[in-house]
Image (cartoon, rainbow, N blue to C red; front, side, top):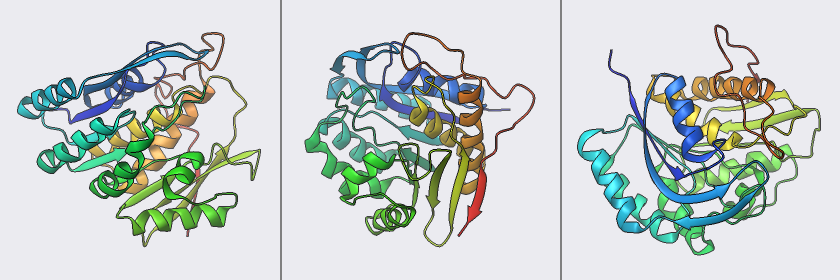
Length: 276
């Protein structure tokens, strides 16, 4: 049986916990064939990022052309794009590639404080790229920066999702890991316009949380390529993430990676889903 092809367009993480390395692991473990377009090289570990080098626009285009000619995608995950040029290249490429599903994890700044997208690219990301993707998965700080709205309450989260829809976004998942509303529960909000849901899970006290955004969006891309419905893919991806956090191997001296094969023979840690 032919595996669905899923692309990841993102930066490389030399520590293996996020970026291209994490995306490929997740997509492969969930049953897809993973292909990659590298946008940046980073020198990083669990403690932090010491150097970033952007891949040239010519090389990004060459990677996209090579994959499109031979390995067309069922789904694409967009992560760390880095430069205005890279964002513009993706806008142009998606007009011809036209995959069935695209998820964008709008990576703006690393947890260690390193900027991972040129500020001049933010408006292009929102105005030109967002309308071309199916789902965006910002955390609360990213949603605040990109949508220009302060988020402090659940009502603010729902308002931010509505603003994203007004900009042409079809689906939005606002991740609540940075929220201070409830220190015991982590709540994400998913909206497809007419259909909405809150996904809530116990907040885990762990330092092994590097790459959670990459892992969640990659899992969603793989689930959609495998035929899952929109909300189902988000719920199952969240369950995968929960187990990865719970079973993390405790590597490194800082914010370590998650477990990448946490399910084994069972699927647990499903989030509580409250439709609205």
